Image (cartoon, rainbow over all chains, first blue to last red; front, top):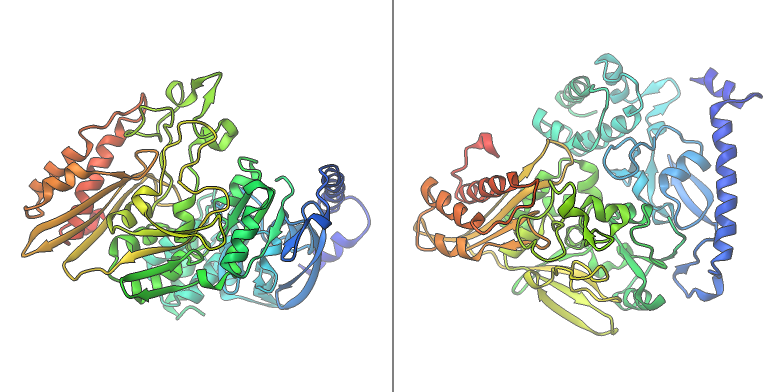
Length: 208
Length: 333
């Protein structure tokens, strides 16, 4: 993991640097469009943030206070991935169906694709990255490995966060409750048996 | 998404004020599970999004003299845990049917009542009536999830609300405020929904500058029994293909009053008055519910691809009635 991070900071061309670059281009276009539509800040009254203009917002992510410069229409998922480089949460369906973007907000599992970043000011946001502390990882992550609960791995971070949030709410959940509770995440490879086995094992130990 | 202003009112008066600007070209945001999808596809293009989550009067569930008031910001998981709602079983069963902790934690009950149809023609920009060159895309095209009742007019989508049938069966009302700062009205939920006749009309009676702040439920008498049954296509997040919610006043095993409301079968929640009348004075048995369910679907007018929904609706009515009196086979729940 550490090695990989070092690598991606180094020189050369890789996928993330490319995405970062193209993201900046998109943002610049959006600003030009915003100006064209004449939505000026002076039209706006107290309690209203102007349209089409990137403003600083303060977020608390994984225990750290951070600032991001975003427009109103930017989702929490995009801020986490593109501005804060927390790329664990994934954008897959972008329509509140698949769960790959799941993060915890004030302890609840939330689809980050369908929350505006600006809505989350003052909230406690936790991403999958918060479930690792140095060499120690959350039992849900260990359990996913043990029960072979991933194949391509793209849904996995969202599933891990949803499983953690679910077990925090229902530490002694039954199999039926696990199936219902985790119904908001989809795995195209069909690794559900491993995921439920992992959640079951942790639930039998009291959820920790 | 088009650029929009973001407003964060803290009082109801402020919320109305923010919604009235831009000629009412504004949208209410609470859970965001529907609005965000509409915004991303440019199906709605408001000048301003008004986030009501900071209006404290719309938070929480409270007992009032004549019933229970549920605020517009109350999420499904909050409602499921609320001791004020334990008597309203039909509503809790529908919450339980949302098999996703994310939807339960984000989505709100009032938001469910106000959501837009999931008709694929509507979501792809053809408007609520799904007209192309004056012809109905629904009639000619893939209408497997469309209406089997109330579809003789131009609107053929189905109402998306999963809680409206249950709330209507309980004779709930919604508190609507605006567009004037002090305007307030309690509207019976059955009169809240509307079937649009043109592409500029909406799916509710809400006018620009208005919003729903609460839903009110009457006191549940001890003899009232309620249940819901939703026919889901899979065990996951799919919307029901047909649903029924019932509310019965049962005394000495005999039904004295009955309300049966169907969901996802018409452009509005569909009240089965005639079927409910047929149940009054009888016991709830396999035979009576079968007869009542036949009446409930007898006037269905399915489109070219959705006659299968008639049988599903019939089953939903039967199972909801049996569930209300604890006679439904647990395997079928």
